[in-house]
Image (cartoon, rainbow, N blue to C red; front, side, top):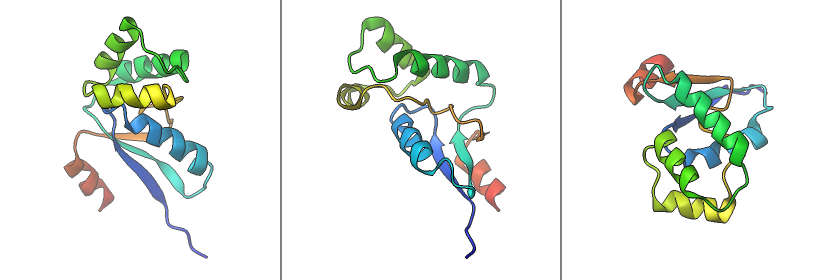
Length: 118
């Protein structure tokens, strides 16, 4: 049986994708044909990735947000709004950030991804 290689494609500036990354890595991360995550994000975001990582490491599982945490989330994930707050209340802060996986490849936009895939 031939297995095709596959990637998870996300827009990494959206907090909601953290839950997808969590589930994906826990269920499919050990598959040999899983080649990584393709994240759409502007280049030069290494510091932001490190800050996201540190935030998720510190607050994973928390279901209540204080003001400092909300401010951090707005900085780390610019699209952070009421639906994301509700998800945190229901599921807690995810273990992984959108930039957690070592085999993440960053592209500035969808067109760059499409060119790379060809």
